[in-house]
Length: 248
Ligand SMILES: [Fe+2]
Image (cartoon, rainbow, N blue to C red):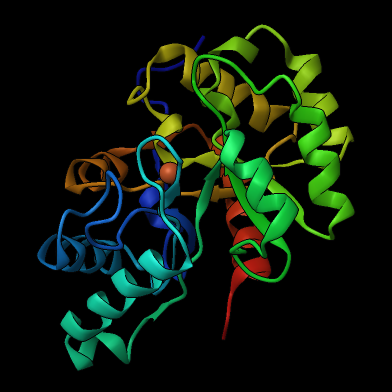
């Protein structure tokens, strides 16, 4: 029987030196920070948690956030100009993107270089209603072009929640998985939390990211806690994330 005194392991205690490969701290170009003031607040709060390396990943989503190298570059410049020098020297910010697998992505993949998290890793996401019918084909194409696809928050796609075998298939064809920190609590709902822990138990998660859009997300991250078995698994995934994406 579980004791009511079962120890809580806080996830924030693992975040010293964490390389955050998924967040929306760049100002004014998606549903994350609205302006540089908000960006600075988010960055400072994440620094308080021990994060010093940021890979901001604004959405590139044709219908809502049609970002390009230019819009992302401009937003990054705006942020750098607003960042106090004493903060700039303590952190690194290397922008990338989170690509929605929409029709526009097929065009980009065909004709342009993609923003990578680092090296060849490309962060992709899908609609929460349905996967693209050609998902496996897109993964195959990404790999053919030399990229390594990293699917953002696989635990949030409810159409896969009862299909553990399909998650395994996606891994088998070369798609890596990035878990959201907030999926380890009830922020996105109990079923997402359950699937997140399940994917962790099945060793299907490669990397972890905050996917922070606003301060409320950071407040919730500071309160996240899991049991001993999960914290040990998370520790390893965070180490792998840091080792893979660190720029220092
Ligand atoms: Fe995101």
